[in-house]
Length: 465
Image (cartoon, rainbow, N blue to C red; front, side, top):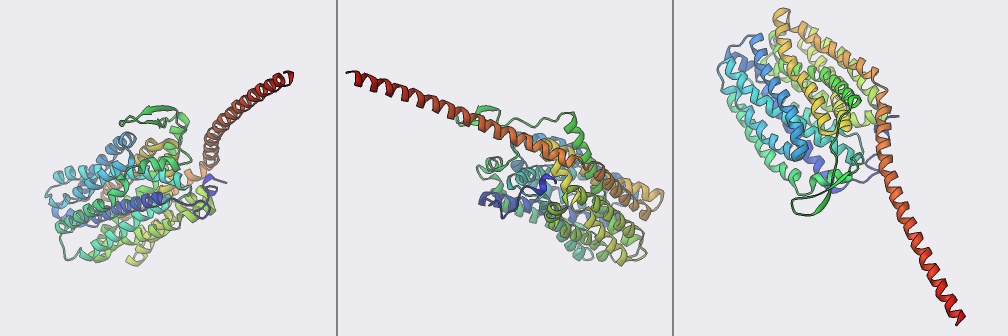
């Protein structure tokens, strides 16, 4: 059985109030990320018309989001190791709402691409920082709750897309996205203190059973002695596994980005849906993902990671074929919803496993591949739409979902490998503690023997007298 099936439940292991507060705060940041991203994607058709961009030109502009995100993701992993994932999450939580207000202010494809480069950098940074913090919290809680954080992302996306659909016909993108900026900054200001509270990061490490055993001691800035954990180092095998998990994440995130950026345009352009209904396509997809991720912890505990990934990939493949090739708006929306259910838990599982293996570096590597798929996919679909058609281009989502299912099945043996690795690490820590305890007992026994011998000598001398 995989480790996720053995790490207990909330009933078997009480959760400290501090960890509960951190979980709530992180959940809010995940929801904020989805809300801001959805607010942007539902206004893509309007911004496309505003700039006069063709499908391929819009694809190139969207490629700037990919470039900014991928570059920043690698840098964010280093920032998380140096300053902490919680602090980095707050900083990116300020930059993301600020950057989303810029795209509607542009009037050319070139300027739009430059603005989206900044937006992609903020989006990629907060993605890695949040997931790194969430991996530590999952280890501290000893429950597979990673899907719940991504459920918050989907819920935020659903709300953002729903609001966007309501105002799409009556409000221009400029005041809409400026309003999202104000709401985003307010949410960050209210939630940030829970992550920046003194000792929050130390509390995560203290409760984490998978934390590396301290290997060296250091003196902090206040002059107090403390332990410093050795950084995660990826050997060749670990790096290979992280890349595999990143590839799984790429195949599934490709579908998220495709539906987010091209789903509304597909309904409006190919199926002649009303702009408000077209904007609701991402809302249907995000709602289905939210439902799937809210049930993700139960699925992982009952089915394990391999069955969850394989079943999700097959379901998403069937759903996307329906969404891309359906002749009516209703069937297309149903297809998007089924796709959301299938993709819901694949990405969280892949990122969590990479982070458990290699810490923030593993999260950064898997997220770079995963979110790279989310952000590089839409430009590729734009080119394929020009070469063939948009429905034909969207079938590539179904193909990659099937690839994710195949890879998940092919790597099923790594579940037991991960469990053995963590057991060995825990065993070393417990073994070291037992050796130290035995040493103390041995020294105590020797002291007792010495005291007893001295007492006997004093008794003998007394009897002689």
